[in-house]
Length: 67
Image (cartoon, rainbow, N blue to C red; front, side, top):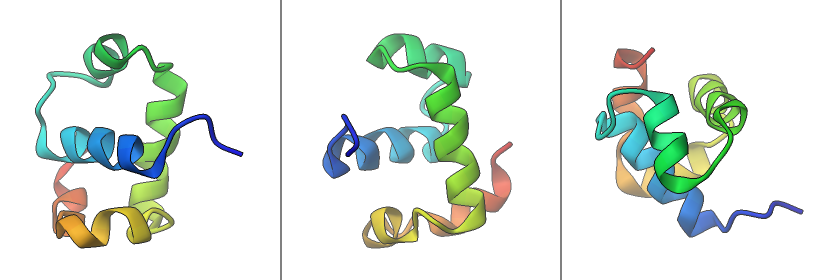
């Protein structure tokens, strides 16, 4: 069971994909999340395993532009 709600994860993924933060480290520090968790979520986005979370935001198209 994840300690993060789907809504929270959706918020973080949106911020990650929209480039609201200059780095994953800055985003992790702001939300008190480990950088390894954010890198894992980023990898999941690229592999498509978080499509169910991000498809409603219609931000999946932005994943190819993010590193």
